Structures are given as C-alpha cells and as structure tokens.
Image 1 (cartoon, rainbow, N blue to C red):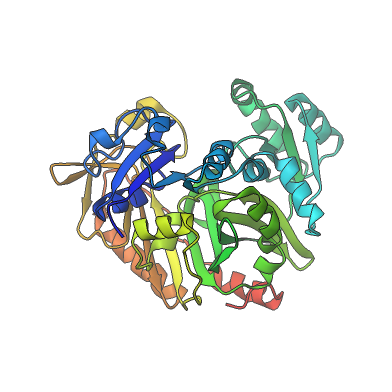
Image 2 (cartoon, helix red, strand yellow; image 1 turned 180 degrees about the vertical axis):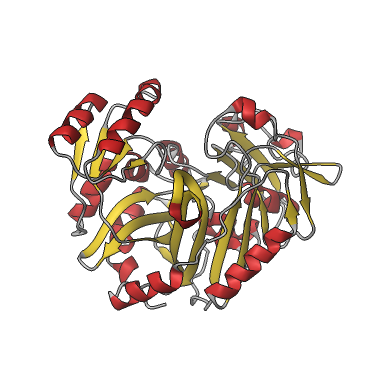
Length: 424
C-alpha cells in the first residue's frame, strides 16, 4: 500500500519512526505537535510536512493518528464522521488520567485493587502520612504514568514527606487538583498489553517488564523509561483476567490502538497500578523490532479493522533508551549544551530515532533522548547480547544508558510461571 495521506497529531515525537517510515514508504504525511512548533524530524521529513493547524488537514487525510491521551473527544467526533482514526476515546483518556476512575473500573470487573487514599491538597497528604506512617507511593492525578510520581523508601514515610516539600511548588504550578496515596507493595512489576481495532483485540498480545529507574539495579530517580523486555504471547491468564475484561467498553467507545495495564504481582495476588491507553514509549519502538510489516500498512489496516491476528512468535525483544544530560530532568540551559551533538552510528539496524535530526547525511542530537536501540532473539540472553553489541557501534558525547535491561527476567519469569500468570 502506498500513496495514502497520513495525518499525525502528536504531543512529543515518540512515534517519530512510524512517521519517518510512512513517508519513506511512498505516502504523504502531515505532522502537528502540541509541544514542538518547528520540524523536529528535520532531514527525515520536509518542513512543509510540519503543520500549525491539524484541523485543516482532516479532510485531506486517509488516516488520522493521535499518539497520546487527551485527544479522545476529537477521535470520537472524527470516527462518527466516518474518518479512519487511530487513537483513544474520552473513556480511555479518563482511564489513564483519572486514577480514581481507572481503579473503580478495575474493581467493577472483579480485579482487586490496592488501597488508595485521595486528597484534594498536598497539605492533607502530609497530615495523613504523619498520622499513619507507612511506606507509600504518591501519584498526582491528571498526569501521565510516572510524571512526578514519588515512591517512598522508608517504612515510616519520612523520606516521602521530605520529597513532598521539594515538589510542592511544582504541583501548584501544574495546578494538580488531587493526589492519590497508595500503600507500597513488594513484588514483580509486569505489564500486559493488547492492540484493539475498534471492534476486537488483534492477537498476539504483549507482555513487558519495564525499567523505570535511571541507574542499574533500580537505583536513582524514576524516569519515563530506561528500557524494556517484552515478548508476544497468545492470550494468557494475565491478559484474560485483566485487559480482556475491558473489551466491551473499548468497543462501545470506538477505541483504536494499544491498551496496557501494569501490575505488582506476588504470592498474595495481582495488583493493578496504571493504564496506558496510547502508543507507549519506548515499547512501541521495541515491539517493532523484528516486525516485518510496513508502518503505513500496519497503521492503515489497524484503523480500517483489517489487521489480522496471528500466532505469537517464540522471540524476546530487549530495548534500551540512550540518553543525554539533563535527562530525566528539565533544564533547558543544560540541554542546549548537547543539542547538535554528533550522533555517530556505524549500523542503523535496530536503531530508532527519537530526538534526532539529519543534516547533510549526518545525524545530530536534538534533545535528551536521541535513540532507542532494540534487538530480537529466541532467548533473553541473546537479545541482551545483541542490543548491547549494537550500542557499542553508537557514539554520542556524554551519552548514558542502563546496562542491566532484562537481566533479572529469568528469576522474574520463573516466579510468574509458578504463580500461573504467564506460560513463557
């Protein structure tokens, strides 16, 4: 398939590789971003492909792709007009952004949830922790998963109280109106995801294990993501008893795309944490490794309900995020030092461009997350070996990344299999 018109309405450029692929596959693209006003894919797509008003291109587009939450109402309106749309719905936006609503929807379907306390002010949170000292996880409501989430380490909650003092002004500026305090629970964090075409799930599903801390051995601050292990699976217990239970609600609201729930699992049970009802980062890039379909074929067929289910392959995908200072922190002055840094790559196999531009056949860093590198193999050990061999062929001044992605999976998978949640 070629010569179709694709309109990408994005926040960041987390699915930039799909945009680049779609253009290179002979299609026309237009890109709008709520964050970036200039062409953040310069050298990969033309300046004229970057637009200031996406509404002007709705009638032009054969397929419209919303890559983030918050666009659900627009997606629903366009679907009712007969447009082919990949993206959420008001319902799935609320699942991810309104934690209380998401937890109630889980509970409604018989999925046990962790005890949570909702507060309207951060002062109420502070008073509660002082009266009920425990180890907690604090989650501001209305932000993406992990945005400003704080995980306490001390059993009396004192470190969380200290961190709250540091973040209070930020939350006030962001106008956060509610906070969820969740009791910390030990276990294995794992997620399961499905692709939904507006009518039904398209198989196989995907199981993934994220690595959210900045440094090896889960040390340092939380990030969006530093790397992920994932594999495709035929429907398993983890999927059927969780994500699959939302099938009717997804169909009723017309949702098209990926939906993911992550959990803490231990010997006492399974405890859902959050929803991701959008293209995940970097899971979208990592999952694409070893996928031999064109991006444009995939997106068009998904939007048109023509994407066919197939049996899961016996492969593991491992991906690593390559970072530059000041990631994961926002410091524009520091970021300016690294913008324009030369990105030297001997072989682009398994390399997915994120914050990178191309100038006269040279790659240049354009932000603090320039690349995702991924590999697929029949064993986790081989996929790990391959991905880190690929990274050895990349040089960016002062780049950093985790070296232990998927290193714990053997022990984690044994425990999950023993508990009956997964088979692989």
